[in-house]
Image (tube, rainbow, N blue to C red; front, side, top):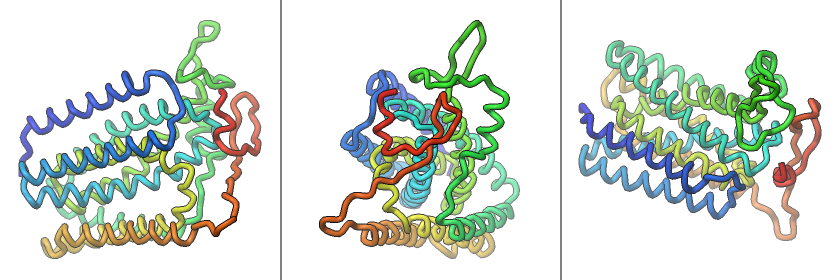
Length: 338
């Protein structure tokens, strides 16, 4: 089905208005985001996605409606994996809580642009070279197995090549300069540590996009459905981070669920690519919901605290601006006065 240009223009305009309202009205000044505010904002974006999904059912048909719902659930689930990495990035750089929302905003803005380019490239590739769906399916299965085998592995940000390259090629200030990414000193342009954080976040999303976009193409080949599902999942990602950052360590089994989801959609992509619509979207939706819901439920049950048991306070090793060394820092709120 060819989506009308007016759908595209209306949707993009709506997203730009949302982003402008967020940055220009709700968060004009840097501040720490409370869990309550994050939960309400996250709920708002989920409800908004639900309303949009209802519109897809009405104006584009039942098939498109189920495709959006399945794609959104897959993208939303996979975005939870981003939160694990965001926590590590912010703790590694000791980013104060009041500065985190701003860098995530621009990270999301960049992610929307990158994903739009990848989606259009993927759609063009699939329409012109049909057998590429078999490659995408195999890649998803490989990625799922790889994720399953490296569940407990954490990225080594201290030896990250992107960070090392950026620090080697750019003049980086010793400390954060408020919300600014660039400053001028003695007539020279410097970048702040916050810019390095933004670079790592953008690169991280690019890596995740290489998994998640083929996954949703296993559900639908309609670029509008793929793009809109991605947008709604990403728009709610910032709020979800602030809502779950303090408890994300409890979702131990989530990565098992995510890896199985990638394998399932990879199999669906290959089977349907060879024999036609053998595995319907509704089946993929039910399996995805069961795997994600089950892994989250199992995680919460297995990691619940016993009565009288103290709440664990995870320690982390973070790079401290201005010191050039590592130190052990306690909870992130202790860095909030920067």
